[in-house]
Length: 218
Image 1 (cartoon, rainbow, N blue to C red):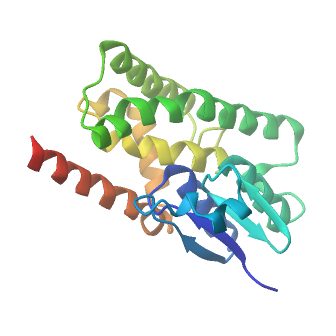
Image 2 (tube, rainbow, N blue to C red; image 1 turned 180 degrees about the vertical axis):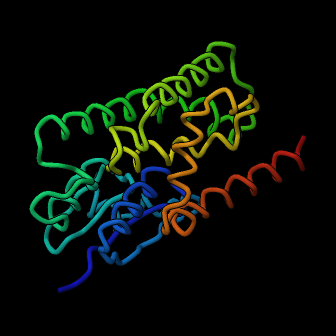
């Protein structure tokens, strides 16, 4: 059976969450990297696959799916076995994961993107309101993992994958991350996963390149 194809931007947070899920499940993917500089996602070929021209996008035989959180659920549903702890079939445990996925989509990832990632790329300064939002977001994760190993308890779930790829933007945060000891302890546990560095290194490489570009033009 052919591997699932993953169309992705290397370094993209949502794409990294899908890659981490696949690694955790031991599911091989046929990687189809796209270049944002070349606007590959706007090519006629890709638009036929995904008219919303977003990544990540998977193609599994005659089935196509995009949106990272939907893809993570799909991968666990297809390859996770009867009851996989990454996305448990227990109604209450699953609801906890879903709540965090929704929070990440609507609040946390958006905050990291708008207050840390985009200002670096666009060479802009953040507002006081944005700075307050990122502090609140870090505080929320710090509270969430208090007395827990992972976001929903002592078991790794796809919620951890979804949130950690945005949390990695802490490398851009000028404030004191020691104020969030629970969150940083959780982050270190995520970094210790055997596939974390392989999946996430392209993001840190991208950050370093953007920092150099900003320094050269400042």
